[in-house]
Image 1 (cartoon, rainbow, N blue to C red):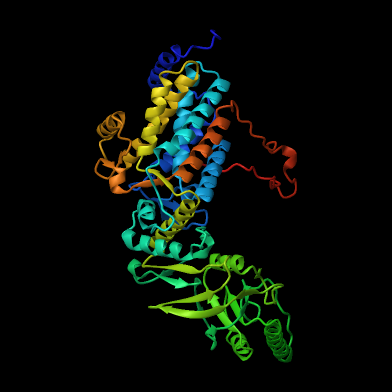
Image 2 (image 1 turned 90 degrees about the vertical axis):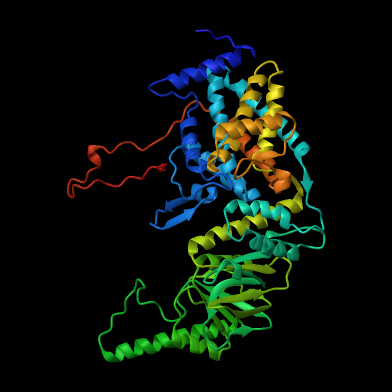
Length: 550
């Protein structure tokens, strides 16, 4: 076996040979990178959802719920993964979504493309340490090139509508213009005087019913719920308690039972129960609690006691909103009807009718609390979920633009421009950097190719036309619905901060995976005969493996 490291001139020829050999192999290919197969499987799930023309997927969760979504973040979160490389890639993609609000599919697909190219380089004889170093050099080159591709910036006093429209239009919404105006108005109104923006200042509430064009902005934080008693407003200084339990006597389904032997004992039990509830409401009043938010059933007699003590009782249907209220109000979600250690505080609480829907509004005057809420209306839960994700995407994008207002060409134009530069440099470089640069460029070209595939275009023709335009120096050409487009004219952008972060995340994952040559899974010993109970003949339970199915 020849252990000599091939030269830069020999590697491209060996690369072509290895690609042909792997294509001809009738029995499939044995991957040199142990993570390639798992990453390719994960990417195959995400690929068809990439871009504005991507498809939707019906997800059946572990609870049996069916969710229709095209968001890569939601899909990755729902998958049950087995392979550790798939776990690593999902964690990296979710980190990208949390930090930048966008780019989850970008991270997965580019990682898969780079590992595929790394397979070819390894088959051609490039050692792993040199491959890792060359990929790191290519990433550094890309991060240095990105600022030179900036074509526009959001001004400090400029309406962000045009910048947010491109981002929110990727979610296949029917009322993109209207919804983008709402988000732009909410972000602009809550922006601080020094130009800073806090995403938590804008809330999002979904209410079933009516149509999307009936969505609106309301002051403060709006949650889906209703006031249940006679008191429907606290106008000055609300002190709030949150309960994830019935507002009244213990539920009949509680895991306890009372043993009673006579009618008198039953009467005494009921009276004691009522006195206990009355005492609990009095304790809330003694703590100056004047607003109670309940996720559970509300007893009518207990509600009367609350009205007598001047307590506003609100019933909500979503635990998620209760958790969000707990975070915003900085008060715990109580599992029993007891006063919280520290009640939440806000300026006003009142009910709001929106057509046939009911909502509750919490208003503050503090700088770190929601100042506006985008109230979304729609006929179906699935439709509202898509719109809600688009709104959060727009809010995150405005937050990024307040940190760095620079914008890059979208629709795959940036990736193709970077591929052109890397190809030109790679053809001139000596040593392992040359083939690695060419491989990185090939991986970048796979992203606009996927956009063209998802748009249903003739991929080879469109990619040839796009590549020809970039070769002539027109780096503003991207992929549109009917073919290539000028992204500046169509106003299709990517934020510089999200794109740069995405490349860093991809580099971290790829540089780690290319050095892994074996995966070792530690398991418990298989069940032995002595693990059987001789009396019951049943197998004793062992701790289950941490592995899950892909």
